[in-house]
Length: 213
Length: 213
Image 1: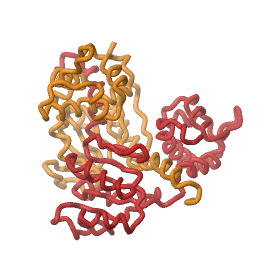
Image 2: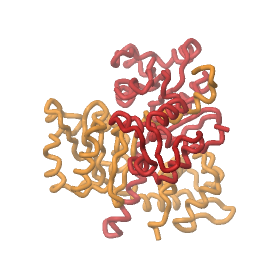
Image 3: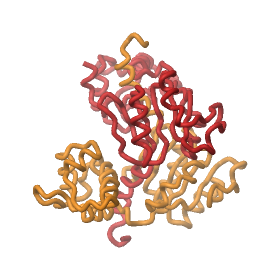
Image 4: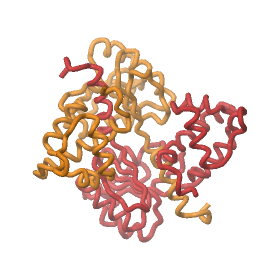
């Protein structure tokens, strides 16, 4: 049954969890789908529909119990767990990823980082020593890894992702500016600021009209 | 008429443009919706439907002319233009953004960067000297800016975004891990690796079953 939940719904759940954590931190005990909707710019009807996939959380007209719903979402999403993460590609972007302080508090523990550049191998980035990408396959045979973050150049991305998938990594966060492919049993998300900006310039251009061409 | 195009369609157009640019670079002259669909993991029917919003690009059974369709998409998305971008928040992440080599070739020109930390102000990052965020409003009165990239801590994001919007910036790329709000005539996109990973742990957890709890 949980397999039938649409991907767009699953993608919204972490946003619900984050908003509920904010409400809990403020001491709120109950929240309406209206209020949650305003926080997230989702319609209340959408929120009720999304959450209905996972059971009955709210009493009609009473709103949702913040702590209960948050606990349930954290369980559904596995947010109460530690996840082991590696980073492949430790150039400027990869270094910023390794040193980013936002992953650890959310249970994403970076256990190793790899690069193909001999000049980078052995270098220390925060608490991580960069390993050669030649050690990747052996590392993955030895150590369990949940998520692979790929921050290599576009031309190298598919090969790196194939190696991660072949070694059993089942979730890929791809920062390389290319559409990489994974088998159906592997999850992949793309982080691409250029694509995000290009979808906004459509609106900017419309607004500025043809005179600005 | 162009205003009625669904946002999900607009968000896919830059991916079509990137795939077509790859095909053009390889010397391909014609592409079928099947091939394009395989490159992007979108169904051929979806591609035909998306592109039909903008006119008739393909002849039935003949595929799309790569160069013509690419040129049209570049025009629609404003990819043939230079866009002026500023970065607010130049900590580790902001510095990686300023130094990222992928923006400039796509027409996104970073013209200034701002931070609230006096220790950072005046520091050089690549070709950009970091300015005090106190200069932000005056800078925006003087200089045209198309896109504001926000890489400040979550608690500061909404205030910074409000200042950008008040000064006339009409597109925001938000890296702060929070759901920030903008008026309906402003475009916003969120780049959030934690949210992306949390939507994948749902799948990881399902796959690992209850034993791994």
